[in-house]
Length: 415
Image 1 (cartoon, rainbow, N blue to C red):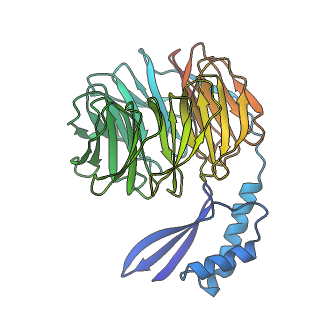
Image 2 (image 1 turned 60 degrees about the horizontal axis):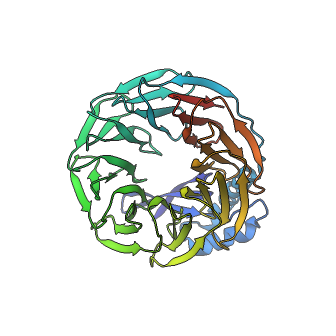
Image 3 (image 1 turned 135 degrees about the vertical axis):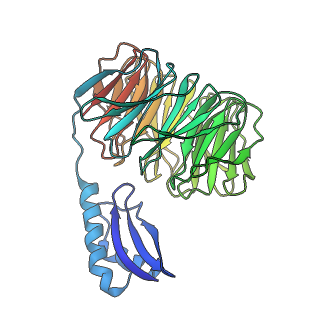
């Protein structure tokens, strides 16, 4: 094995190693999820060198330099104020979803008008319309981090794969017997997973357009799914109150996470694939060991349905949003609530961290989106102007652009 070069990954903090093995170029990552501005770099580099034979003595100074750059980035203070940049009347009929590519240079919108549109973020111009579905386009995604492909899932029971560059449709995936309501690419961009009201999920091969495996076993609709980072596991959340963990390679069900007493609303892996978080209409959020399938905590405190849950990029904090109009932040290790985000006057359907973990964004039926400090729970900014419920919100990777989608049929770009 011969090390070719070292690359920085800012969020979550890490170093990517490019190396040659048997004539083939490969990559692996050293995750530095616990890195902070106060970490002793010398000690850390010695630990890395002991664990990773590719990091030889001659590379030591370079690794120190990279980690110092990561520390500098982590130490930068966030006081970015967002201003309304553009209002886009995206579709004639209601919007269903919005999503960024990784850099935030463009984003997509899905709609009841049966199309998906691609937009240029900088100009607010429509780049192209993806036409071909025969019913509502409900679930949409870019194959981030690449961003060269788009998947659309529709109430017409099909999923389509498109070129983000040309708008060409590569494949139409047929096989579900009811509406597709959730979808996801794996991080490796080799598979698309679709979840349907027909109680099944399917994995599709991006290259040849074939169905790879069908995941059966739920007794009600699948409304959430998520791959882990390494791409060898996928979870499905269902209205049958359970979440299932599946082996991607074989389609075998590894665990059923049983404990919630109502429909699942949201489910996600953390970055290092060790934990799963689930949110439910039973007003709780649960934390599970992803390897054993054992529940490690029940996070309580909300007075109404939990509508969304997410980890920060390092997997060290969990954010929950609820129909009770509040959001909460929990420490994933101690399982304690570390901040309550209070101020919205309606239910909060969406919550997300920026990549840096320094801000939380929430979208509410009170027609506003809000920015919060996750450490103190303080509301930093209210994004006002929509005239109806906001159901979707997202940061770009750098955290300097926000998009909001509303039932008022507009998308707003904030920067």
